[in-house]
Length: 93
Image (cartoon, rainbow, N blue to C red; front, top):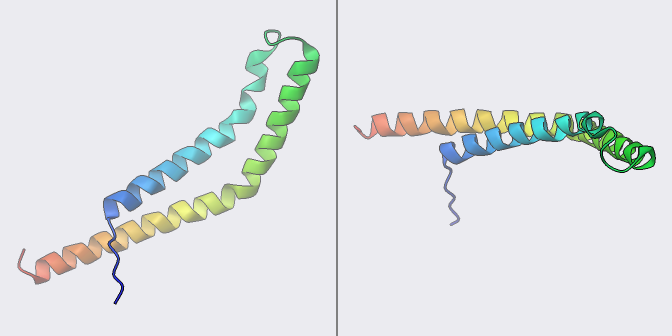
């Protein structure tokens, strides 16, 4: 018989990590203008802008998935937390 352990605190932590990761990933494209004139010329700055534009496109492609995963983790956290409350109450604790 297989068993597993679910820790609602870990689920919540993972949810916050994924949500924060998306915020960090999606803000990368705003970095390019801050390097204007300080990283070695317009060719390099153009390459950086191109890279960060492609980066943003990639992040946009996974945005929905990341949001759904974070949402599901939040729902799982709430459900398992509620189950633990019910079990604890049923056991008299």
